[in-house]
Image (tube, helix red, strand yellow):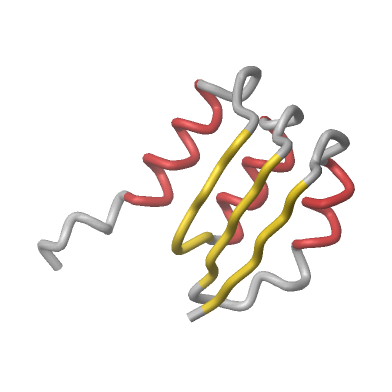
Length: 79
């Protein structure tokens, strides 16, 4: 509590919806399933994507990758 991270997924998903058409490079630490879904739905022009997950998101990755037709570089990490 009090660390400022409680609203992080909401803030990130809102930003993805706002800047989706021009977004080509994205780095997110602390990726969530909700954020992966937003990227899949709203960010079709991403060419470079770097994700660091604190939870298991492996089941959502195939859908994400198949939705990003311009993706050239994908970097995955975990904690």
